[in-house]
Image (cartoon, rainbow, N blue to C red; front, side, top):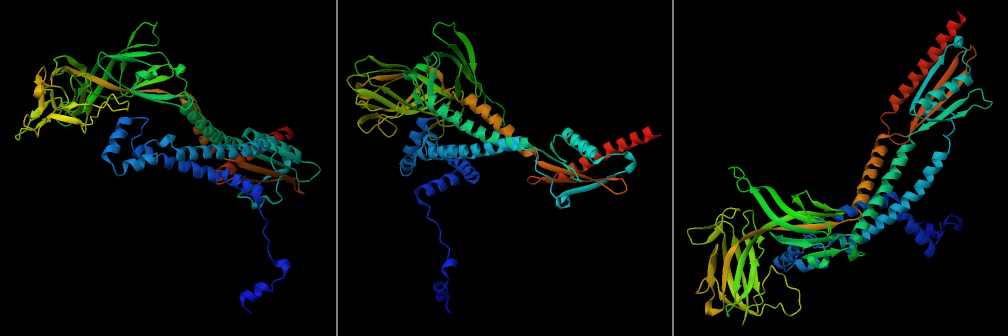
Length: 543
């Protein structure tokens, strides 16, 4: 008979019929899978893995200019990475989905476990097993007959000793000839586990509050300039989904001076040692100005808003005159450092120039040197010989079209180049306080001086205090879970025919407990010392 024939001849009563789940049953099954501890741990691991791209790729909320430059430098992969939201990891759809699923899973795990733990706290220790010798730790002892120790007194003594060791006890005396005491300790282990998972939910809520009601902003401030904490006063502003502009604290900041100290030793020549920004700040327009010092990792705080120093550079002061001889632009222009010696790229735009708008693009060298081929390069981060090297253009800069344009980029596709290294007139090379006249009478540019600037990161996160509190609670709960053992002890007492009191005890741990044997020795030693003292006192009374 083949297997197929055997299956067809199988009696109907031996066939297994699987019940149909149905829509409600499927939802119940999915909910149980989602709220299992295994799923919660997997989602927590997925959240950690999903955070990795935030460290590998520049993030738009932290530095949008770097993201824009990354996409321009990688035209093939950059747009695809942007579509996958890898430049906005923490606000992406897929990160938010994992975040919400983890939140639901933790809530579904904690509530049932909290109910079970509450019942366990209110319930008495379990009854004494019949055979204590089968437990992992087992011991016996005998109390001499002359001690006059009854089984009832022995059980009461054992219960008192266990309570002194932190156990909750339950007596099982009744009418039996072998009364016993059951004891249990380590309830804080499960409580610590619940605190840990509840605190994780609190951390998620605190982070969500920060993301919904907080904001992050960037501002570039040049020496002797400042700004007020207003949405329009920032270079970049990233509000939360439920952010209210009326909640902005009305503080103001002015950069008085910025100093950088560089290492001049032979081993680390040119490495920065200290950044110091001297600020004049006001909490409100009616408050008296006060002096503050801003350093790296030493923010200035305005209530719940912190101002961080995240970057710095040079801002050459230039004057641009147009073809009519009028000043089209005058003031400092920030340059973007490209290396440790502060060699920087710079873009200068003069949209008010007439009859044509003027634009300049090039680089700034704090300490310019010239090699044997006549090529200028920067050799030191301090401004010992500052120099501007520029190419000039004229035409329509595209600033009047209403489209957002970066101040650090110049689109030359619709402009006419006036000069450059590859042109007969050559490029513009300006030392301090020098002027260059543009070809064709289009105007001139003057290098008037040099200032420094700082890049500030302004952060308001209303959930950070809650995140700190819940993170601390999570660590405490995890410590309790790891160091507090869950143990049960049973002690049974009986009377021998010759008058001796026979005692046996057993211990059981919930989970792996390497200290259970030491606990057995400690309890046995405590019982022995107590009843030995009782026997000695009884003998003294008889004598």
